[in-house]
Amino acid sequence: MSERTSRDLFARFQRNVLSGAPALDEEMVAADVVVEQPHAPDGRGTIEGREKVVAMSRAGRASLPVTFEEFRDVTIHDTADPEVIVAEYRLVGTVPGTGARAHAAFVVVLRARDGRIVHWREYQDRAAIAEALA
Image (tube, rainbow, N blue to C red; front, side, top):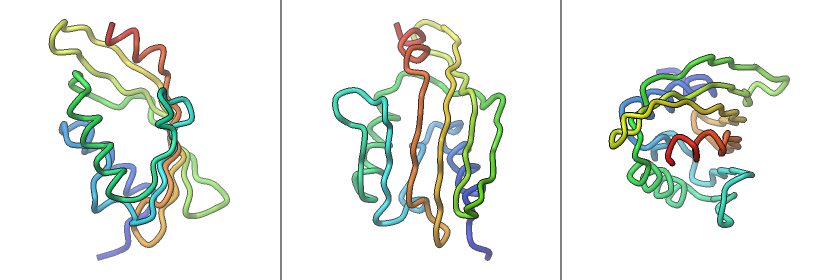
């Protein structure tokens, strides 16, 4: 079996999100993974280590009342570094309690090494997310 690339891992992330599973699972991330969300509230901007990242991913999925339906406008940019991609996309979902359908823009910078994610930096359209959940 060939080693998973950054693109492979991003595709697995998409499948996880659309299936309702936690976005990042233990098989995807390195033991020393770093996840950064520069605009996250409450000082949760950087999480380090597989256990903490997987726990954050599980808790996030469990607490977010949205059924994700599709990724739109996905553009993946290769970089000069073969370990790194930049992915831009819109994530579309429905809030089950209200039936409201909305989308938000994201940008992810993903670095993979030895078939696992070692660094994930995510920028979210937090205003669109807040509006959808209001």
